[in-house]
Length: 288
Image 1: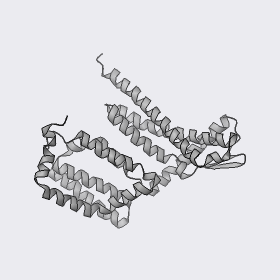
Image 2 (image 1 turned 90 degrees about the vertical axis):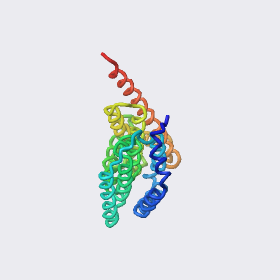
Image 3 (image 1 turned 60 degrees about the vertical axis):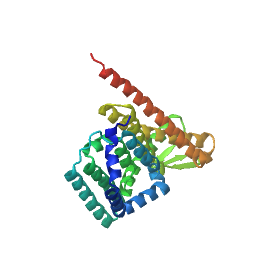
Image 4 (image 1 turned 135 degrees about the horizontal axis):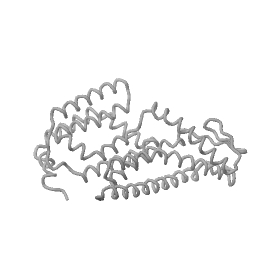
């Protein structure tokens, strides 16, 4: 239940709308470009589309958590964070570096929160803040350097699974050669998208279901091997169908359906692990 003290800061802001409006306009002027490009990427870039879900979810979670009962503004610290974020915005704009520019926008928002409410509010909103950070697409140079090792590892594991089923396969880099067919493990099939989505999912489940930091860290960490293994399983299933059923099953709706089915399995695995960790928390929390 939201207490009267919890909504007092919002009531105060409503009594003095002019500073709030001016602050909002200044924020839009300073960070309108990173906002617009971020919305554009969320809508048009497949590797960034998870932001369309994470952003409203983060806002809803922040609203549910509400404002800290006792507001303790820290103007000096908040102003320092805000000035640093504005400088970062200016420098990243000169370098045309979108990721840093967008992170400076989040930093400026954090500075305003610290200025008006205090650091305790950021701690109260730790889960929505991390979800917002995950909603910002990584720089292309970073995704490229991460995608290649993931491509190669998925290709190796997928080829090993196919060979274990006595399916003739030859691996050359990120290409799996089957009789009469070659499967290219492209950057889109590296599993980086599913890894980002599973990290956000693990963070969300851990933040809502678990209470101890160690359990949350374990759950989020488990999302990495789960994503890698299931992506290799997806390659194995694709190669299996191509070899035994029809080569056309490596593309089209069947190929995309496999990705959704694998993601559902990944969600079930993370949910099961969260349940086990929750049981472990309960056992450790019981008095000896």
